[in-house]
Length: 185
View 1 (spheres, rainbow, N blue to C red):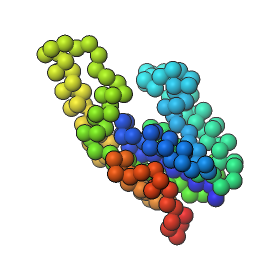
View 2: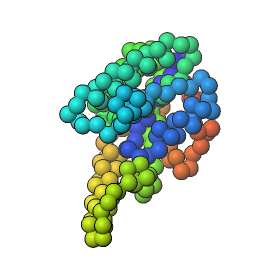
View 3: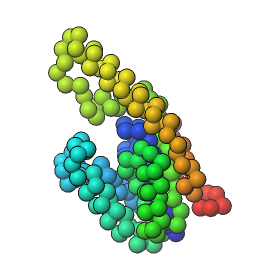
View 4: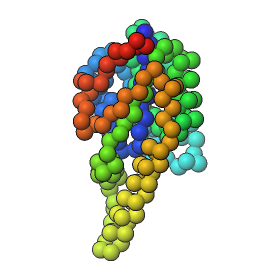
């Protein structure tokens, strides 16, 4: 059976790291990652929204996903930015078109304070001094909290999926997560 898992969650929620650990533990699980493709093709995930780079990365992701889903009994994790219900609908439809018989959603609900801390590790604040450092950090924190809240306010689209699992990477281990037990698995 061909299964696909779509990661859902804000930036810096630990999605990629968690999924990489799942792939290490389970040999029949593979992953395609939009961010990994962006790094491979362009050297960075931080791209201009006006470039064609994101489109190119998604096209490459779909090529890789198609190859994986040709193999028997595959579980494919798709780790790609999908902040809206319409984008998730598009992704799930494409996965089904490529042969995924079951599509699961992994909804990452990592607490905002942890996501914010990881965002500063991933992209540290550079060179502000004194008073300006405090303003830059507070502004970034406010912006991230607003982004995190708006991401989780967007409808998930649970009916698109065979099943949705909520994952808090601070509480769950990759070894606990690949349970497809349900009548629809």
